Image (cartoon, rainbow, N blue to C red; front, side, top):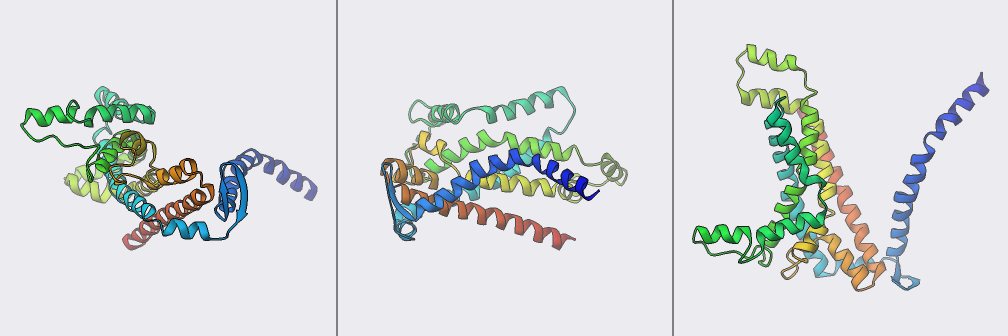
Amino acid sequence: MAESYRRSRWSNGLFVVPYLSVFLTLLVFPLGWGIWLSLNKVDLFGGERFIGLKNYARVLSDPIFGQAVKNTVIFVGVSVPTLVVLGLFLALALNKTTKGSSFLRGVFFASSILSVTIVTLIWRIVFIPNDGLMALIFEYFGWQPIGFLSTTGWSLFSVGVATVWWCIGLPMMLFLAALQQIPKDLYEAAALDNTSRWRVLTRITLPSIKSTIMLVAIIQVVMQFQLFGQAQLMTNGGPAGSSRPIVMYIYEIGFLRWDIGMGAAASQILFLIILCAAMLQYWVSTRKEETDA
């Protein structure tokens, strides 16, 4: 009996091997190698030399990195709440079994399947000076056109608009799935009591999907901290670095200046920032649940 139990445990463990091999190959090994590179002076041609934490000191003392961190934090701080709120609003509006709602779900989700190149091309046409869609609208109303992609303060805003338009499909679908799991009996009981829509939203809908809200927020925090393609293709980090995110800084250090060690150190700092942000989001959500309970 004991031997049969041990064989069963070994056979069950074999099911873990495919995932474990992928996890070790694509996550654990790159993370460990990145940490090792960050502790060495390395360029694209090799020649490793151990220098300890000097790469981290160089990154943290670089004002360009500080600006990139500031840009990324502002971008995440604005885009993530916008994606959560707008995604929830669309899900609430389209949570109906009608032909029109099914079509609109597909329309709003369609942008999510586009490549970053197509997304940035579309929004460059919208924001491009003089001949862009926004320039034509401003001209129609007699307003002075704004160089959205070339003006400090507007460039990061333009990247954020393109990103929200591109990423809104996933939050909407996750919220739709959560809304459709709420028991109908709760809404029927609220209707019998003539409960207002606001009370239904705040007392039934939102508490029922609070775990999904937390999930969407954490997913978006992790995704938006990795901003790169939109900023590179729309503004190239400009003007004067006002829209340069951390990932673009890592790319420039590692592959344009060929300082792999410093780039690896910056990537490890970004990893810690994302991890801390996700943990903070989770902690705030769990504390709120405990308070509500």
